[in-house]
Image (tube, rainbow, N blue to C red; front, side, top):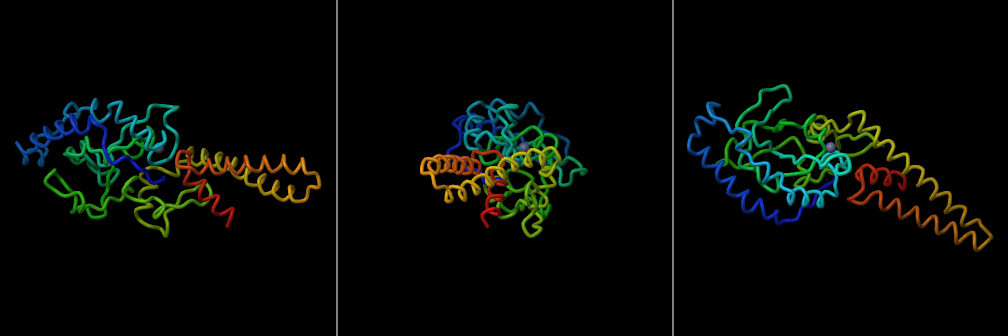
Length: 269
Ligand SMILES: [Zn+2]
């Protein structure tokens, strides 16, 4: 997980149709707040317009900001699926614990909110995160648009507001919380970020990096020892290419960039 930098200006459709749709939801709630709180009335799936928050222009903006990667596991999503639009704070209902009850309403007023939307892979979204959104102190939870979400302390790291590096670190292909931080731990567990198939993919990516690092260091040593100037030039060119691959592998757009950066830090001491 790396920090995502979204453009400040949200896609136009969220500012126009999104704002209207959000205002409609607020009015629905305000017309019968007690009913929504007691569960006698609830927002139905049709009350949320996927054509707005899932519009092409929203998806394209997120794909660009996230370099076609899942906001949570950093797998490239675009070439295997179009990726899901994920609401960080669940729009229809939430669970404090994975086996706890689904509490409604959810964060309906954030259904079209730019900072609440991310692109993520189907596994992270549907199999792991789903409606799970625990808070450190559930009594501070915002239960309607009249409450302030800034009082909440979500256990799940926000890919834009939080810097994942402060909470998560890699030991080779395994992710672990920094100093056993509870938010780091909760994020790993909640999203299944050490799920076996994920760890295997990261291990494969790391094997290529290990090989490149070894080649780079061997080449550097050999180049110094070579008497032949043409040979020196050729080896230096290959070494330069390897350095470029290594630099590319840790850029924001690279798959599993956070892990590769950690591996390179360990290798270079
Ligand atoms: Zn994912």
